[in-house]
Image (cartoon, rainbow, N blue to C red; front, side, top):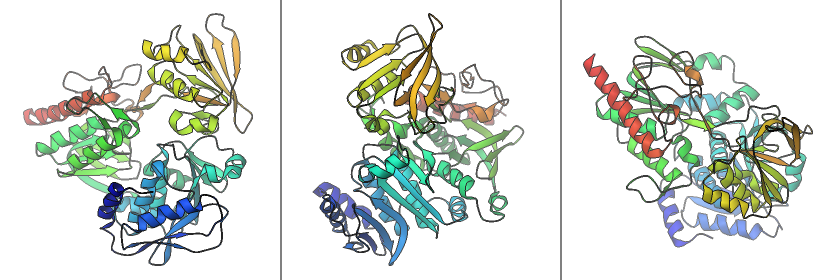
Length: 516
């Protein structure tokens, strides 16, 4: 199951291991048990510190857990972690021995202060590209907290649980039979949800408040614009810190990239890794898995983080990018993960043979409809404008499919549900003003992006779309605050543009400090 090239990579990766990590698989008569055992034994062959053996009570399905020093690490797997989840297995092995990318001390302390016991299950699909981020974050927490267990569950091996829990989207994190998180997430977001759901040890929140000191430049955002800004200011000799909920930002969700000049082809995760590598070559403080909740103007500027930490800075560069835009209609949030979805690649398989809709007629919406048409019984594209906005070649592909249709000039009014799942979509025909209803099992929202600028309301000027207004040197309306990339009103939301704008913002901050 592991070719020679991958085996060689694993040998190099696992060379860091100092103590044995055991992959303990339970005996099972399931037809795919042999596939699991073959995978685990192949992984074990790449390092003398990785062991694979059978033990525990019999299981109806393939299942295993990780042990370190003879003790469970808290990370468990139900199913065969191939595809996108193979990396989750590799990282679980590294994290069990305290290797790999480990959070900073402040985040580790927050994780350990969660009130236990913590017992979580994350239902995944091997085709889901967002699932590994959630599985890896929760597995990591399980290795750091003494009373934390997390189980990755491939929905293929637990159809009764999927049905009983009304799961219609992945990744779906379940706590005590209740959906705790649905869809893409990261360690910081998941930790915050767990703190709210489980609570933290007494006086922990007040103890988390930490003053991090003063920086010449603080960059908020870890995507291409933020990385460029941080690198440019660090090269100028400024003491720089970068604060980000996740390194790479939207890059993490981007597949093929073919328009980054001088790089004919790359992929989002690979480019993100390169950004991290480049940042690591400079003395840049990186505070990952955090968000800035408040900016207090003044000299210096003061930033408050969602972790309770604070810092001051002479110059601030905003490069927070954008997120998927929501419909903002009744029922949307209530049925997220239960019929409302944003990722067709992740959640599409749950709608095989069903009637679904895609809201949005731009390139992303039409591309999603084309992809979903190969899975669903029917796909209806609902577009607000009189005509689709997608490229002509995509529209031609859509029209050529027998199980798709388009409703134009339609205002989405409400997501309809029966209390457990989506059953339809209500919209207004903008020509006749009549209300119409579609009977559906799922709704995929593809209506563009919204800038991540809410925390700056009243601090800097923005346009009607929430984009930060900047001049030709990335200065905002507030002295000492700059902005770059997709969060601004600069046209053309492209990676190459964001990198250039980030560099401009860094150079402008340097120029203004030198003039002052």
